[in-house]
Image (cartoon, rainbow, N blue to C red; front, side, top):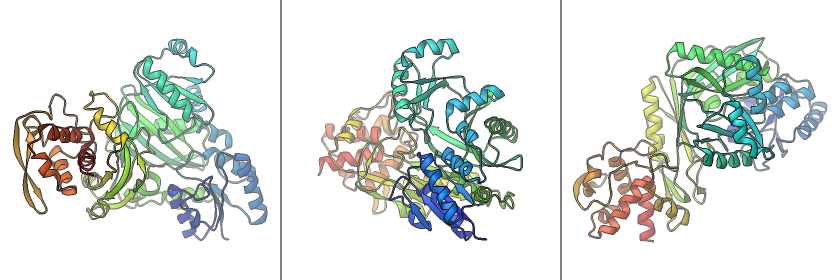
Length: 524
């Protein structure tokens, strides 16, 4: 009999699940608070319903069940797993209990579950607008000391998540976290040192079936920006086993029994610790892309089967490849044009190039994982090949910004910054000065032929050492900038020392975007 499923969310990340259900011959009804959700037309039926409105969703689902039949409810890569559980309970459908889903959605409830079960996780306090003045005393009572991490209790994608290294930073971090919380609550917890991982599992028949463990690559303190992940993990099996053991203990403590569980963990100096666990498929391209690419397992399909009460046929890997996802980012401004997509797609082992920023968009240096500008995904039989491909593809993409933009100009004029400043310089040159009057000639091999560029001596000595946010060396960035804008070669070789210094400062602070913006602004 044809299955009928209700899909919560019709955004890009839910498109994989909608397509997967349709490929099975199922009927899909999708709901989303955005009436223009990009994947709405993939479904058989679409209704604009706020995914936060659990009672409206439950009422709609009961009506759908009465009139057309309903076999399951599902979401992927959203923070609305509690809404899924509420609908499932209202309609008597398979899934995690609503209580368990709330435990996996509210970080204060989650930490309470971990604490009662002895699951390793950070010490914490919960705060809201009414008790902000009590934070210092409560931190002392809980034995918490700087550095601390502040995050909203009910959001995802690192929105409002920030490191606080002193009382002044704590005040700003608390304001950010409370502002990103739908319920006006936040959590302050001890900072966990060590590398970070993403874990995913399916839970059914009283067992937890691990499906993936990936290395996460986090940058740009005091924020926690995931510039990519690589699956499977490169860490030794002994470390992976310890992480999995703690992850499973966390799943059990939350009461998750039927469906998906995904977790963020760290391998600290005290051993594995859990950052959080959610009762849904992961975002960040892991569940729908990199895990299937690396293993050959249709994880989304297996999770959909669970949602309608079926047992997945097999979770045995068909291959053991490595898949790497990497992101590209931008300095602040407004996008004029974007180039390099086609070149990125031609790189061996690249499977996908997913742009997010387009001409006319306003962009900023990311303070959460929603503000990145695009992603490249690679898969290869060897780990190094996949990583190299994904990183090289990201370096192909160039976002040209509109000239004379006050946000871009303010960013470039604010540096070079200190080593721990945010946003950081594209090229952290330290004591090297772009204002050096001495220069040496460096040859650049442009497609049209070699050209010589005068480079300040103290930078020339490090031209193959310094690297930007995307891993470009100073030499390769200079070459790419001159390919994008050939007029730069004359500017860098000019006689106006002040102007030349301005170009070098723009390059060190804002990378390729910075120096091309400087050229466009002066020549508009």
